[in-house]
Length: 108
Image (cartoon, rainbow, N blue to C red; front, side, top):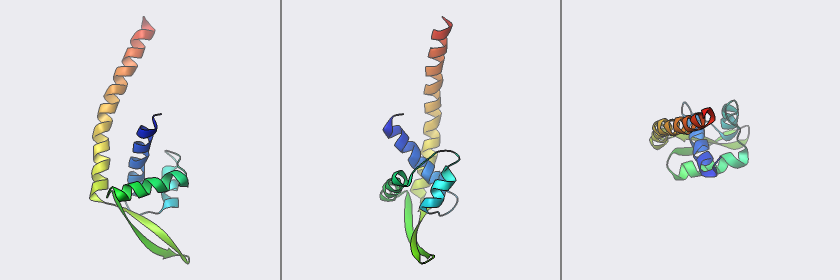
């Protein structure tokens, strides 16, 4: 898969993981695990990019004597998810076209 496409997809997945409530790194990884595998070394740069892009905010709270960062989705983040949903329709049309061409070629 194209690395830029995968990066964009993972960013939207991270936003979707925190859409319904604030979360922290390890929990985001756990929530995404049934759908997509993501490592900490991949997640944290994504979180930093999303924060820099005003798609989420971060606050620190103490948990068991350590500071834990909690991520909160912003209106920009919600709009990014909605934009992805609209773009996905176009991607599916392109996919259908590619598959149709392959099926027609296989039938000839």
